[in-house]
Image 1 (cartoon, helix red, strand yellow):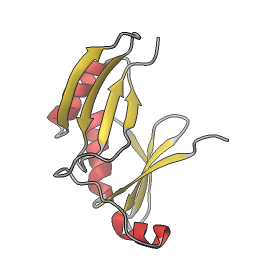
Image 2: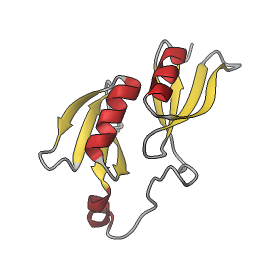
Image 3: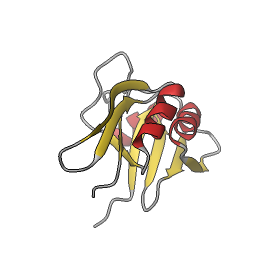
Amino acid sequence: MRLGYTVVYVKDVAGTVAFYEKAFGLKQRFMHKRRQYAEMGTGATALAFTAEELAGAKLLGDFRRNQSSEPPAGFEISLQTDNVEAVYLRAVKAGAQPLTEPEEKPWGQKIAFVRDCNGVLVEIASPLP
């Protein structure tokens, strides 16, 4: 078993892709012609975004939407980099909501947190030593 995708349901797929390109330097690897599904290249797995209106059909019902005005959902997207400070500043400049500035943790990893354009919690972290 291996993780294939992380999929986040969002109101605006194309806008979210543009945000992740600007804020984190990720590259779009696929966008459906109707702009209701897209994938970002992240290495071995993909970070995907699907339009909220498609979620009802997939999930056979309603779900809790990500909204910046509400507390974040109980998950995070963790992006690894060798330069946490630079990515944190880039993300905040691109419109990410800053939560915690970069901080060295006792286990040797540097971590910062922001919320993306949809209110999703994003961890910016150095690799584990």
